[in-house]
Image (cartoon, rainbow, N blue to C red; front, top):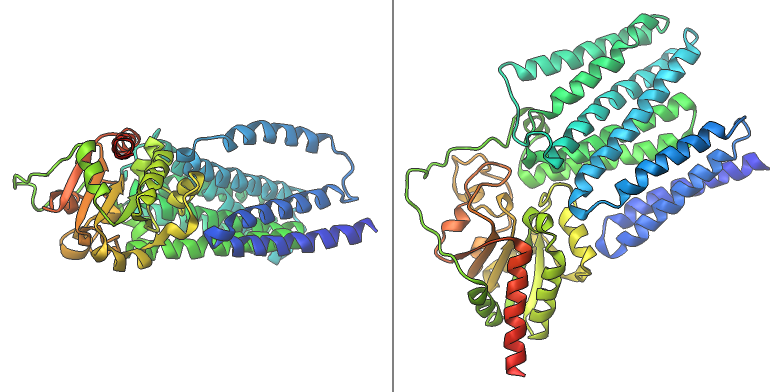
Length: 461
């Protein structure tokens, strides 16, 4: 009876995982998707704990307490820290897969079948490199490690040689599982490779790296499912791995980049501008000027970026949205696929501020709207609005799809300074005649605009 209940619970959990991914693909159903995933995971864990093969719950309870003590604080981080928290989650999951694979090998050696050894080698190699790679990604996102690419001559050759050595040792172990003296190498070598894989990748590519590491962690979990003979783990890991890979492809297309360029291109180093020798000027404006321009507009598109996330300005942006819409102004939001530091970063922040889902436009929806838009208000977005990607063949970001805010009638950019974004490229948008730079902290500046509009509304009443 218990065995039948466990199998039914596993089937329901798998169905809920699939529905969760389906519903998470749209903002309007995302909350339902999160709930479905949570219920599915609770069913999977509960059914596993009922397994009659468990002889003692003592160590399970201890691990539960320790994991909860670590996980609860991690779940209470600020929205700006979600990308690095996600990277840490990948690291913990991958480390668990590595530990399980190592334990299973030494429990079963030398009577391991070749296919099982193949799954075990995949689990350990992917788990190890994902563990250290995710830690490095979290360090870059938290800025405890340099965000710029760290490179040296022959780096790609060294990295691929290290990975190749791990793979060759893994193949030998698949053929000769009893060679236990080699097993530690397929743990240690990928750990080193995980570090070396991430340090040459710049901050501009972190959204792609996060989704790619998610894919690796999922594939490690799927391999662990074969090792433990768990159909649930195989399906859940496959879903995680495939969805992470598909998301990585979407991220690369959004930047018009290939996987090899992301992983080996050392993109993100500060580039010398072709116009660096020219003395270019910008036009700046005050909150009063910005409020007056917004008040006279009939259509506004707001483009959020990482600057909004750092300043925690999303709630002030919601106040601005409310004030403008009450005046009959059509306000929408344009979201670039790689804005922020993880896929969907801006969507999450705007959802936290209760911005209506139907007001969020993706890049393909927003770009045809900019020529008919009175004001494009850019809040902290840099590389994803740079016209050089469309006009300057010498630019490192040439060909990258961008939000074409420069086609709006007036552009206002809230930014602390003229410093380049993660790609290290000067933004030509800032020097256009139609652009006004609103220098300052995003939260403070939007708050000042809101106060000006509120005073004007109060005076009119």
